[in-house]
Every structure is written in structure tokens, then in C-alpha cells.
Image (tube, rainbow, N blue to C red; front, top):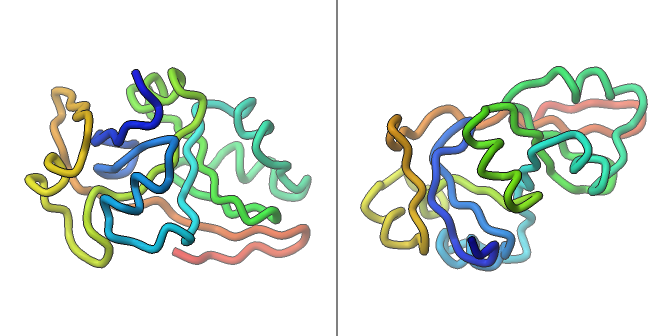
Length: 146
């Protein structure tokens, strides 16, 4: 498996594009490549390699399911708990993730399959579900963004 390819897969929340090359996702979504992407990791050990969680929020981060946290270093990272998606991510360590649609549009399966290099589909198929919640945390303050 090549980490620089653009994968179309069902994530823990919705159908998404995944790649270790964020510019590939930006091109597929027709989005500004300077806008940061969400990073998905398969374990808390992988999270510790990318950022430091403020002590006041460690329990919240550990217990939150389907939640993205924007840390004080401005990185948006989500630890995945869904077994199938987690197994996929473990092969790569981390992957940038975004919903599988053009920016500002709804999910179109034909477009998503055309834009992706590799399609990973399971028995559940593709279903555009609810996106993850997003919280921005600082040393003392937590703000819900979505």
C-alpha cells in the first residue's frame, strides 16, 4: 500500500478521502492546500508522537468518541476507535482525512470514486454520515467549533 495515494474509504464517521499527502486531498476537493487537514491516528501512542495533550483535557480526549481535537500547536487530530478503520490506519501510522466531496457540496459517490486512486469498500458500503465534533483546546479553555 502506498501512503501517497488517495484512498476512498468509509471512516468512523462518514465517507472520506485519506492520504499522507495532504495536497492530493486538496486537489481532489478543489480546496486551498494551505488550509490544514484533520489527521487521523490509530492509537494514543501515535497521538503522543504528534502533539502534547494539556493535562486538564487528558481524560476528555481519552474518552471522546468521534471527536476531533485542535491542540495548542494548531494540529487537528482524531484518535479512531472504529475497529475496521483503525485496522486500516495502523498500516500507515497516520493519515490526513477529509470528507469525500468537493468543498461545499454534498457527497457524490460517482465523483468520489473517480477522484480516488484506490477504493476501499467493505460490506457496509459507502454512507455519508455525521461528521465528527470539533473542539479547540488551549491550556485552560475549550471551545466547541462544530
